[in-house]
Figure 1 (cartoon, one colour):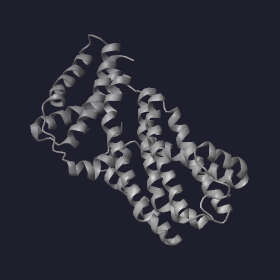
Figure 2: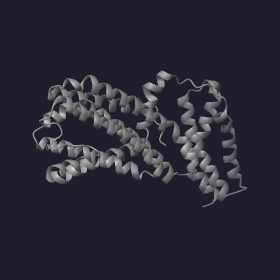
Figure 3: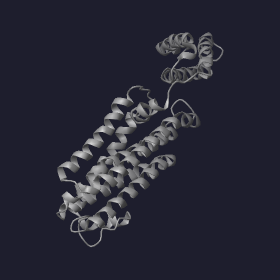
Length: 318
């Protein structure tokens, strides 16, 4: 490939970027954070094109032309711009965007969890003995009864539910930190955690305590599982930057994703606190099965609707 074909291949990106550079110069200091982020994304794409041109076609007129485009935009990217994104906007859409903007990672994370849940249900249904041993190995004491809540006091049931909540907080931390180990611990704990949930549910339904399981787990459990999913997405995003850095160095990719990763962890923390309040205030009432299901589904649907609706307000694929 010669420089002319290289320019033709990247003509659309370069033309769009030149137009956006002119527009950003007119905006001057009035550019919003959303506009700056969008322009920065285009700038990084053109920077990668320039790097390839310098490497393959040094000292050519075409490479010099790209250099001029990059030079014009550099001052816009790095100038002291007033950013108007306030705390309200951060809470209203930026936290949710940190999950929505990496849809491929989101789909992968949910798929791992769904597979684990199905495996756990089948295991608990077909091989209760080994499934119970697995639950013991995960630090949950099932006692001598087959199920988790059936035939036990409300007090013990509440203690057990709290134990599961604490377990889920620990898993949230682990699945995020696992991203720095190339995501292997993240995938493992996402899978085994939902296997455990499926096992507990299957054992409880087999023993006749299915309604107790629903009434003490579902109201807050859907939000808790959503938190683990978000923490897993943050962890997998880190792993992706380390494993597949794309056109840039791993160190650069890591600096670029840290903002959204922190936003995702912030969303996870806020939601965990809220689910804890639901557990303490709502779940403790030991609601009717239909009401318990309705509360859990409503809270879960609200959470993921916010991610889809609010998260897509600014869609930048990284």
